[in-house]
Length: 382
Image 1 (tube, one colour):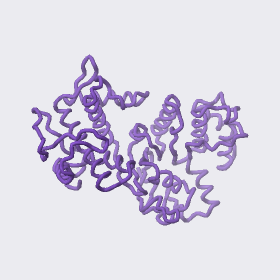
Image 2 (tube, one colour):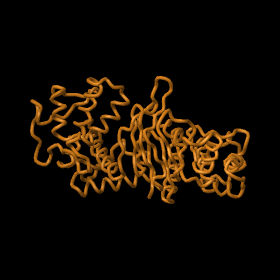
Image 3 (cartoon, one colour):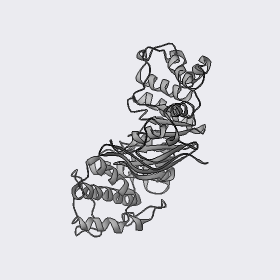
Image 4 (cartoon, helix red, strand yellow):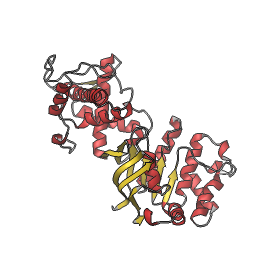
């Protein structure tokens, strides 16, 4: 599939503050991309620029072959009405219009209002019986689904969603996620900003921003491997804390996500990394080695970024999460030596020693810390 969205060297400054700094990104037709990163990293700014809601300081945005920089305000408004569906965290519904009328406003801006088609869009999101209600008479989850209906009514090529589940309870979050899955299965192109790593993993690709720059981009295969790593790491931490064995506490138990978790657990068991017992799951020797390496890399990275590079905690956490998946054993030992073999991370959690550490004791057979997993990344570049 061709690129529906083409972003090149995109920058946006507000005075002395760089909200975006040289971001380049392609989004293919039919792709679901999640944009993640700490607060202030430029996620919402990127979406606003792709939607043509703001103009960049420099760089370019092309959507479906249209260069947004060449459009005047009237043409930009027409472009948004015909090409882009927008879903915001704060809904932005007109309070004195009914839900049906709010959806029809989007039609009016596009071409001509059609009550039948607007009702069909509401039925699609499960709100046909709420069409005559005012926004104030709807729950937060219902308002968000109404906004999705409004975004879809003109059949846009691109759906842009900014934290669409950020204000929702678990039940409504699951409904919105299920809608997004259906849209992706239909071949819709989705670019979604989220803080929630569980939502982010559902996309085909995850893009991470930090301080206005593109930190990384992962394909679905890599995020699946990272998901397995997180389960192993969580089981390690459960053992470390003396917690009962079972599905790791932080792994989501929501409909749809639970099926993926179970599938990953089954795969880890098949690979001989974990086993299922009466009390749940436990790490086997091979799994302990892999989890041990992940925990070691993560906690060393936290120590390095917070205490030596003096980055803020949000950026430190994002960087540490990246480092745990890409550092080779050799580079990890070099960092450990540079830090003088620390015994604990900034949070006071123990850092498992490596071969370079004076306190290192060889693990039993099969528990050697695992190095870079075969995700296509080059350890020499880490």
